[in-house]
Length: 170
Image 1 (cartoon, rainbow, N blue to C red):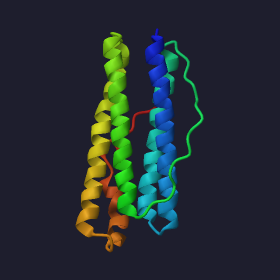
Image 2 (cartoon, rainbow, N blue to C red):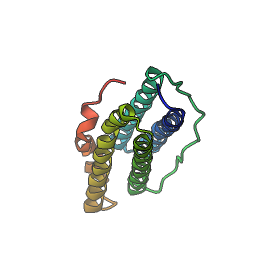
Image 3 (cartoon, rainbow, N blue to C red):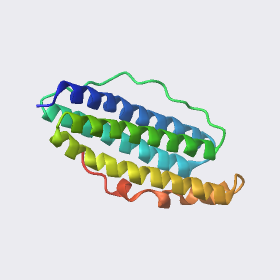
Image 4 (tube, one colour):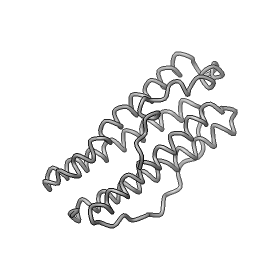
């Protein structure tokens, strides 16, 4: 049985994963309407990954005797200055999610909820990969400069993290 404090914080994470999906969808739409179809494809894939994360939390909560709650989601930012702005926002958001996952891990240790602690380890490693992937993309953008985006847009899918190609089922 899931303790109420752990259930509540995991339900909060459902909202954060859902917001992440919507944020990446908004970014994908911006990229697509600004001629960056490769970046849009990368962001659409990220949005799908975030939906899977949300489902993982939902199923886990329900399997442990809790009740997953589907929240209303805040509207994400949808206008960006340029591609660098998009990926800086992605990195900031992934760092926020990392902090959120770490907060849940900390609570599970306080509550001695080792089952949930073990469940969360996949997310801990996933966040390391996500942040590293976005930092690599930002490094590439810095190398290219703001005027050489065609090749970057064409090649961005090769920069996806290994986790993206080996997503577990929700």
